Length: 361
Image (cartoon, rainbow, N blue to C red; front, side, top):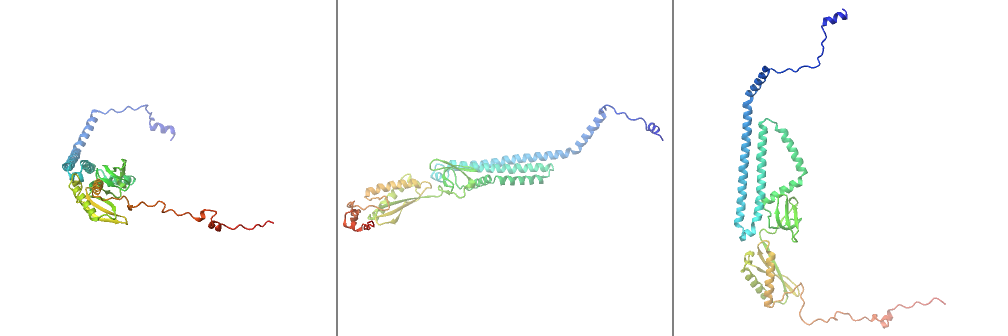
């Protein structure tokens, strides 16, 4: 069979058109599409409605629970503040509680509790919503765990400071107005934060101490303090007279305002603390309100000096006291002139070296 016979049998070759005209959907196609959508909605509307209601219920419960918890925490903080204001102004309030310390401590605790409550409630609600949509939470939780470990490792100092501050506030280790020794710095606490504590030093400087750096804290404003005064008198003073005078000063001071509130016990004459050949030291001690020991010591020294002057008891200023009597001869300690000081004295000439003989002729 020849090629010319095959080509007519195959029919005419198709000629490509320059452009195909898009098919316009008919009314029947639109009705069919709408019917399919309505059927899909009719089949799945109950599932979507149940999911929506469940999400709405989770959100409403989370919001209501968060509001209730935050309101309860706020009431607790307000009650703590009112308790501090009730005792403020009294002797106990000035010792243990002041308004600023109580306010800052309660606000810090309330802020921490509110943040923790919001994070727990909203985080749990978000996970429950994602679980409602049947989303696999395992990769999300694993990624969050890895990210948390990485952030915690990178910001470990910040986390350490924050946790240390939380426990310092919860345990009430110190507060505003306390005088503390934090190791790296010491002074009066003027602000306590979750990350940094501000101290004012003795010269007025302000120290910013990170809570994570505080390894030990010495609080000088808790409990009680001791006022110790050492009185140095001459060794020939009458000890009974000295003791009676000191006891009289202590008894009188303990009955007067405001020292009777600052003193937590009677001032006691402890006795001889040390004794030398020409002087002796008598120690007087008393238990005072914390932070008031220096004030009591200054007043006690003032009163002791005036009482000793009236009683004729002399207070010496150092470990050794000069003995009254004739003035010493200023030349008594001067050595007599030596015979060797003069070059013409027999002793000096006898000690001078001999002249060597001359070797020249």
